[in-house]
Length: 340
Ligand code: KG4
Ligand code: ZN
Image 1 (cartoon, helix red, strand yellow):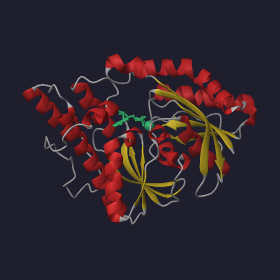
Image 2: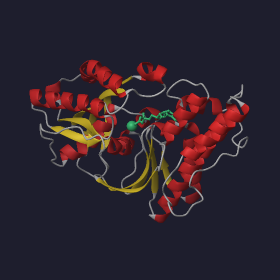
Image 3: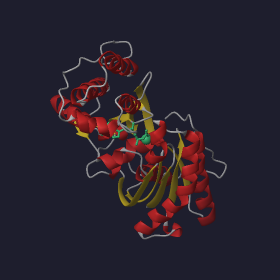
Image 4: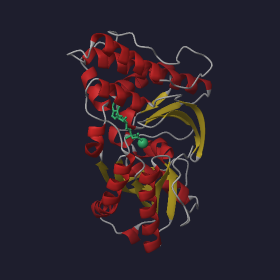
């Protein structure tokens, strides 16, 4: 089955054509025939965060050319497709609306069936495009700029939320701390790079809720952000950022992996899958692999380009829904607050 995936929920305009085998099964496999991602980082950089109105406008200008490019690189035309899959939510309403309208228009014009999918489901299923993928059940740790959650994937299409962040998303914490240190937006990858030469024990930063038992699988990063802010207020931004970046990053990765493993153990899940932009972080990947190995849990770490927002993961999430007979109607709209 050949599916076009279209993603416009935040600040990436992305389209991909994916060839999916065994799409209706519990272990579909996907191979991207094309994967085009246009990031708006340059549009939002001087504001230090995403400006929703500018995001919508940029999606509007880019969406159709990017779909064309994805089709061209895959060597196919609209009528060769078996499905079109578009992100319906969660995300910025204006940004989502652009993708939803483009998806509906393409479907109406071509007669190709349409699916409207959840962005988080896309992140969870991105692993099915990697060389190595688990069959359900597994535990998904979704860590991105907008989300930090743990989901039990019981079967494809059946998800149970185990925990969420109570304040900032992990990526948001990375980006805010980066801004504080004068690094460009989005700052996660910059902190990752600077942390490599640093000592993660140089600063003893708080681990959020990790020692509290009540919210066993929830996260909190606002205290950590404040601790970095206090440090910078008292002593200024250090010339060499390595130790500060490494210590901050260690606190985030420690809190994330601790809770993920706690949840995997309690729900007896044999595998942990990392997804979302922060899953590209080198320390998070290393620590997750190490802690999983120690507990006999299989760790799946999709390549970074599958972790950050892309159209292929949206195609994958739509493919299994379409293969099972789901169809979105033309009165489908964006759902900015859609909870998986
Ligand atoms: O999944 P994504 O592309 O978009 C959202 O759905 O939010 O995630 C973007 C987030 C940003 O906050 C960015 O700073 C973070 O992922 N990120 C990283 C790294 N690469 C991207 N954070 C830490 N380390 C990285 N290497
Ligand atoms: Zn995302």
